[in-house]
Amino acid sequence: MNEVFVDTSGWASFFMKKDPYHAKALRLMAQWQQQNRRVVTINYVLTELIALFTRDRVPRSTALDYIETIRSADWVEIVHIDES
Image 1 (tube, rainbow, N blue to C red):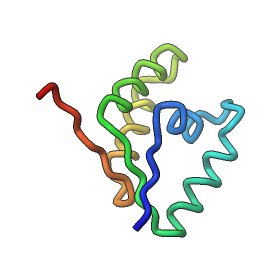
Image 2: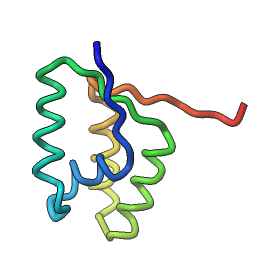
Image 3: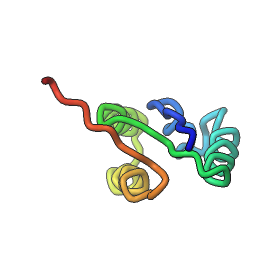
């Protein structure tokens, strides 16, 4: 199985409809799912997303829904980085 790493800007483009790359991000995610590719991200990216959503005044409940969408997707792997 091929893996694709998605960083903060990729997730932001996926969720934020006003982002200039929103349509492309939707297409890529759908394509990767269809190809059975695993999307990999890290816990720090989720933290950055919350900060970005807060800066852009995304309602808290919506931001948390976006994070839960990532966390609950069976095709997404979240790698937890720690200090050790």
